[in-house]
Length: 241
Ligand SMILES: Nc1ncnc2c1ncn2[C@@H]1O[C@H](COP(=O)(O)OP(=O)(O)OP(=O)(O)O)[C@@H](O)[C@H]1O
Ligand SMILES: [Mg+2]
Image (cartoon, protein in one colour):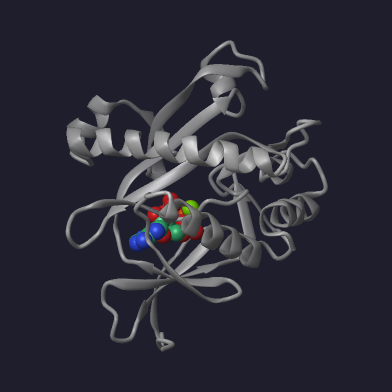
């Protein structure tokens, strides 16, 4: 039986997505993916061709794959080209970043050169607060701010590492190096932590296995050209279309 999902009200418009409540489903939301792209805390703005559709399809595919591998996540069902139903979560205001290869802001915190293969994946926490510019925080900052418990932090780290272990070979088989990525987690109505948000070329650094060509949002961030083509290429490699 096909369920009927009727949007009631937009409750949030972010930089990449919109969230709506649904008639008769108080524990679910509809997540709409936009073509809008931003970088550097929204100082740079633009659009990427078909990004809404590509990111919705990729998130659908990856969250379905992760669920099969036992990763609890918010994905329920894709309902249009760029819309999906998700479990409503209370988002933990911590962005969890996992790194396999040195790139981006890690180059400012260490002496690693871009492309350096890390001896062991690095997991970092960032406080989700636009007014502060999402600063990196330690476990003690999170505990002092009471944004997560010791147990929550352990779960976030374990889930992030597990997701990395699953996705690294997945991307590599498709000719892509998973350089680093950002995850968001939240609690469902029973208080269990699950993966939320999205996994897309907006939130992952993906490099071509052979040439190290960047196939992600860095092309937009740094005006490297071929932005639309990079998103289309990732779509083709993952979804075959
Ligand atoms: N399952 C969920 N339940 C409730 N909120 C969610 C869920 N998954 C993701 N979100 C939140 O929905 C919003 C998605 O919008 P978007 O990614 O465009 O936000 P953003 O501009 O990156 O802003 P920010 O992440 O700083 O809020 C984010 O705030 C994200 O934390
Ligand atoms: Mg976001």
